[in-house]
Amino acid sequence: MNRIDSVNNPKIKAWAKLSRKKERDASGLFCAEGEHLVKEALAAGIVEVILTLGRIPFDFANVIEVSPQVLSKLSSSVSGTDVIAICRMEEKPVLKKERLLLLDGVQDPGNLGTLIRTAQSFGYDAVYCSRETCDFYNDKVIRSTQGALFHIPVFRIDLEELCRSLQGEGITVIATTLRSACPLKQLKRPAKHALILGNEGSGVSEVLQSLADERVRIEMDGFESLNVAAAGGIMMYELTVQ
Amino acid sequence: MNRIDSVNNPKIKAWAKLSRKKERDASGLFCAEGEHLVKEALAAGIVEVILTLGRIPFDFANVIEVSPQVLSKLSSSVSGTDVIAICRMEEKPVLKKERLLLLDGVQDPGNLGTLIRTAQSFGYDAVYCSRETCDFYNDKVIRSTQGALFHIPVFRIDLEELCRSLQGEGITVIATTLRSACPLKQLKRPAKHALILGNEGSGVSEVLQSLADERVRIEMDGFESLNVAAAGGIMMYELTVQ
Image 1 (cartoon, each protein chain N blue to C red):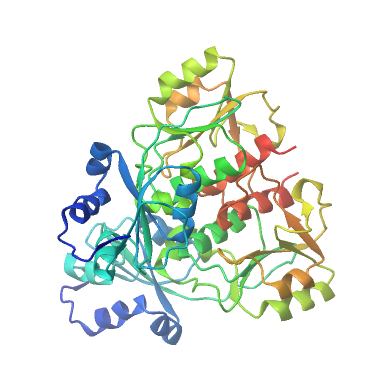
Image 2: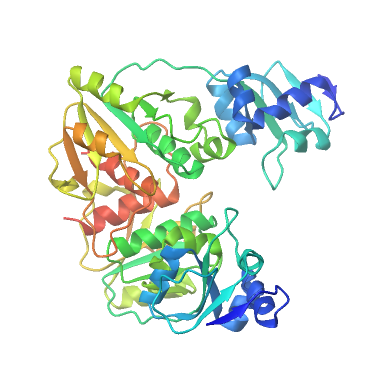
């Protein structure tokens, strides 16, 4: 097993830059921290190299033992970690298009990660993010997906164009909104759907609301305020579980 | 209108300590930041004093104009704020007990806040937190509740004792779990319920699971992993909306 102790090692310096989106995009690499995420990344076959403090609970060829200083230079976690995997971004193929999630400007990394995790748990086929949506290789997003990001195809794309194209393929586009919308329990479930969720403050854009085949609202009692990840969970559950 | 410019003013120094739980508990006060939260706190009648940079969009008697330095000393937000309200913690009465939410060791402030917000939106009557659950006057919790915390009764209590007492009152206790549980869609809705959600890592404790009248699971497709705030949203929606 190789060993790196110095934070000035050129490889370590290069990997430390992966905390920046620009460097991730340029190199096609990102970091996954902690045992759970590293296991999920290994299962997805996207790991380049594992950096660890010494204990190696993983069956993988390319492992480098590093000093605590090196690991903490690469770590984004405040509480520290004992293992980090350097992973390849890989565009996963969309195998079918029965359940799609479209995110229109979701800003909070925790919300984005939670939505990707929920989509994977309810058997969604892909997640499409608008260009204004937060970067999905952000470390907080990855942590919030609990590894779902390594398994479900996720793209950044123009949603207006995408919606028109999906409609051409017979997929029903559903937008969540508060006004002049069908109560969720009364929605007739389409055979194939693309569900659009919007920005935390402003919701789904007017353009996409008009474009949608269905406008749906979650029935509430008074306060009428839901976090987008909670709303997304409710919508995906209702649309997929009989 | 009064004015305070110095961060060394004794009042400012005292209020700055409200970022610590111990000081909040000792004084019975906490901070609400930003226009939306201040409005919700005013609507709830719990505001002691409003500190602002000058513009006063609120109709309230006790307003102090402060310098940007003073406001940033009191603010927990990285992006800054232009208004903060010093508020009183007030124990709100539980008017009825038809829909109750019990949180067993929820650790993440964002999750806790989101769950309180969702409970208020689905007409829950109260939220009971175990002693291990994160402090609900934590600034991140308050932000995530979007002000719901000022309207719904929230308590810290021993959940085991509470469950036994609720069962004595004819309230059905429902625990979320992954094993030997009834699929949510098949659950017969009780007239009155107390829904228990658990810790992010370990779920609802064994003791509470055994104590519960019903054990319920959310039907999933493969990944089998949901954030507790997303799971809570799904459960509360299903239990309350016809």
